[in-house]
Length: 393
Image 1: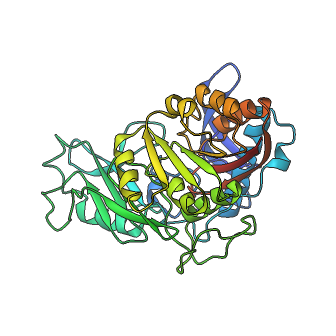
Image 2: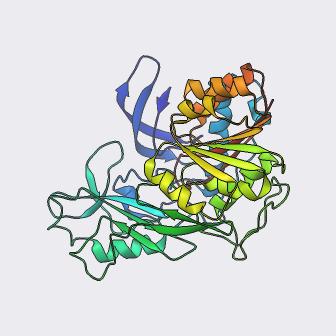
């Protein structure tokens, strides 16, 4: 098997092999001899220069969604050993306009001229960026002002983060850039809105990157709205939250644990629908943000700890659990704790189909039933895919 970036299924291409292993090889695309019908010309000039930011611009968006579904099916079958993977995985929920969606960008400051850069694909070599086709227009506006003006600070600032509240208009540039006075920077936090609730975010705190709303109907896979829907449309982050709530089917008597809770997103959105929610999060900045965000919600509390440390020792037995771990998936102790306490429903949110498949196999072997896996395209033009899986005891 030879892995070839920027190729598409069914194409005839000329490839240069750059790495050979015992059971696979890696190649670089040299020439497309016969292209796929769904190959398109990437709109971004930096794509041709080798930018490593979004590697699927050459594929029509409908094909991107098909490939992401196929990836999830493959991982569930090959790693999770689910023989009926194709029946489990639903068609992905995608964007209507899959560009200019990303609300956060991190630029590396070049050493020689203080330029704002990304990196070349597969390396640490810097690539000066003039425009990015997947970031929110407000981030591109910052890039246009700041590009080439950071030579005096590059010795003590290695990276610059720019974050925008797509639904609040707030901007956060970190760290402060006094050398560019026309750019307000160094803000301690910003606020972003999700399904009618505002969330404060400090620079280190994680939040979903795709919050730009589009005028769209509620997908048929979500049974009911559950929460107030924004009048100006739905973002992919809104859809993700609605999907989690819908699959959890909250009951007023439920005690829900939001594991890996970040700034409290799912815990706070679920709180009006259940008796109590408990968020577990190890990042100090996220916990501070979560407690601020929950200041008007009496039935939410947060535990600052790793999920593997806190979940087995909770004073309450959850009736439902939301899992949203990092790419590495759940710690084995988390899975053991779930099998010991056996909450009736588990909704697993994952940004990595391979670790999702691994963890779902453990839970199913422990007695849970896996009902479905719903992919969402939170990251168009890239190979990344988000999934929401439902399990019941």
